[in-house]
Length: 221
Image (tube, rainbow, N blue to C red; front, side, top):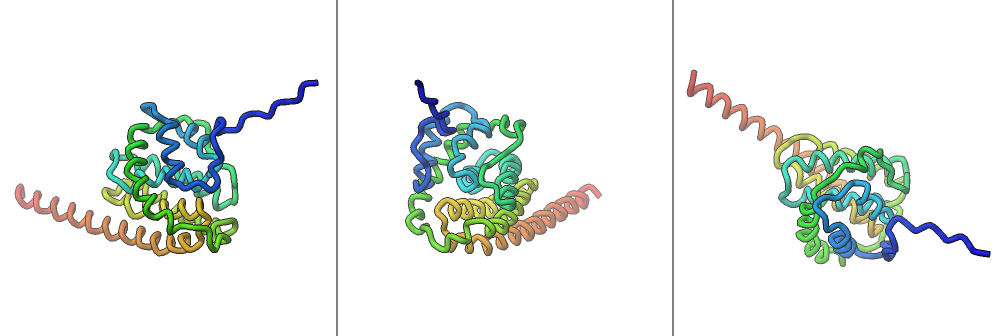
């Protein structure tokens, strides 16, 4: 009698991602998505074995390098799903069907990954499993709330405000991936610095704009 054949997994025969450095996983993604665009659903399915951590890293890296204007709003919105599910302790990443159909530039992602991989390889030896309780539920409730705040900051249309919250989310993702509680603790001051920099940067920016408007009005007044 024929035995039932197990259904294929979401990564289509790829080797397990657990324990592999993030830089290697990014190299795999460059080869996996060679097309002009990538759907959110394809990314999530490919990253499901590392779920929240790897998806947050993929979404945060474009915020850390010069990229397409407006991409921070899209990627910030996408960060809301893993952030909220960390708050509620969900292991599997679930997003609405409509969001899964969103498409992002494959070329922009590959360029970002190529820029990020050398830096990741230089710091990965410092990241290791320690104080791992801080990277698991219920500690992830705080982590999720912090990431939610960083995502909301990224969604705001504030010029040049992407880098600090993007770096904070990237640190959070690496801490989750490698179960590094010490790195997770360091994300707290990084998040505080991100909010402070965006706040003061916004105030300075608005002050400059207001001064420019008054100067222009004085010319024609």
